[in-house]
Each structure stands twice: as C-alpha cells, then as structure tokens.
Image (cartoon, rainbow, N blue to C red; front, side, top):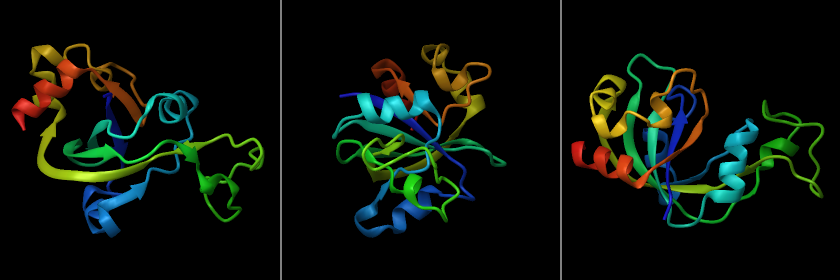
Length: 151
C-alpha cells in the first residue's frame, strides 16, 4: 500500500464536499502538473490511503483521510471546452491528464503545518519542504504512522 497527501483549496472542493458526495466518493480531477499526474497515473493503486489537506486557506492542514477506490483513468475535464481544465492538445486517443476516484474514510481534527513541523519523524516530509507546491505528494509509511498517531 502507498500513502499520499491530496491538497485541495476548500473554497474549490473541501472535505465537507467529499462527505456530501454519493458514497462519499469523487473523481480527483483537475490535476495539471506532470509530476502529480504521474503519481496519479503510474503509482496510485486501489486501496492506497491519503490525507486530505486543505490548502490556500486561512488555516491550512490535514482534515481527514481518504482511500483510492480504483485505477487511474482519463480526466474528462481535459476534453470539456467549457472546463477551466480543458486542454486543446489532449485527445481521447492520447489523453494527457488522469484522475483516480477517492472515497472519504474519515474527517479528522485539523492538523496544521506548525504541528506537523514539530514532529521529528516528519522533518523530511515533502509537504514541509520549502517551495513544495504539488497538489499530490507521496507520504512514507513512517510519516503516515506519525500523523495517524497524533490524530
């Protein structure tokens, strides 16, 4: 099993939005960074676990856990001319962007950056590295266990 951190601006899509979805499941669409896309397409597998992280907000932090529900498949927003995620260079024969379905496991208390930074086992966590802006990052098993212990 792999572990991940999925960032979302809560004004765009929050953990509460995921909780309201049918079966508490959604397609994780709109990823438009090649490294994050590669994580989705090549490394995420059904059963993998993820932290749901609210970013670009007053109090960023981990707010829950989720599970990857299926393998990656082409992100339909790349083909929708009305979508802000439309990509004119993508085609159904050669899709450029992918997504996975994720299901909410549980909402948790908010674990803010300061609390994460205070944990020695997290000192090398991708999220905490200067300049990290990826919306999807891998989390090691040790990092996952450390965060689960403080939840």
